[in-house]
Length: 187
Image (cartoon, rainbow, N blue to C red; front, side):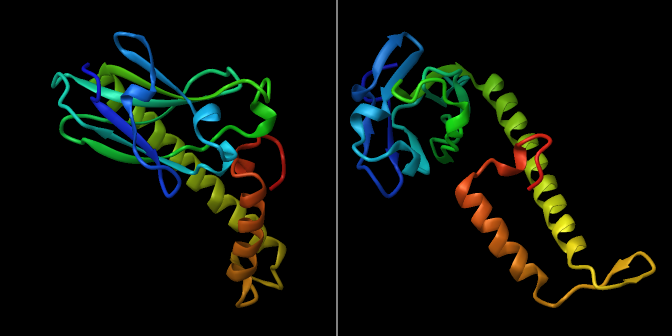
């Protein structure tokens, strides 16, 4: 790909960062050191936009990945000729998953087969479904704890139970966005 073929920006934080700011590792991979280029704490960067500035081979697309502390690259989304821009949630790994806190925080761009990225996108959607199931289960368990009586197989709840649940959920989510995914722990 030619220089200037793509750009990113951290939504609400940075202006456009062109592909020239990335280190080109090989013909199909680029790396951007977030920890060196963005002055603020990387955990405050919530979303990144990837914009394809020049068309690619129709069978190819650009995938965006993140890596924190030298950990394995994690897929976040893609752009292609038919879908040239996308805003993607960064969803940084929790600090317990980071191997070395002083190691680099990176954004990786990879030129890949469009079909392979569509498969990764399907896996990402399955993860969102699992997350939705866990949110629903968390809500159900919370509502069970307020059950003031039972009529058959129906729960009888205070009218403000959803408000109370959302306040509690929001508080836990702000402390740890991945709290629902912790296996074996009560939320």
